[in-house]
Length: 105
Image (cartoon, rainbow, N blue to C red; front, side, top):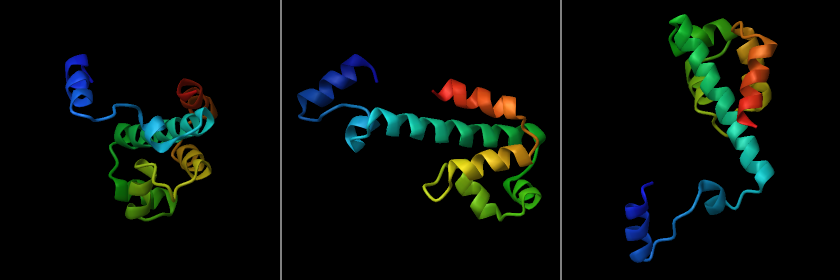
């Protein structure tokens, strides 16, 4: 957000901060959220690079399109474990998954 907009909002009585501040996340919780989002983005990237639809990808994983959409959106019902297993199931290497995790840290 540019400084001018921030100043106007604060001048109007709004409080400007981060999602972590608003949700009162600990640094560990914020890091976990970033990790999950990074894995979900990588899952989408793998799918797009292969030229697959969500439905085609879900079928490869033995899942439904709606469940796969939740995975790509890092829905609260999706575990990090499921994201990692799905990435490996689509051909991502452990090294690639590790790089995603390292960048998110």
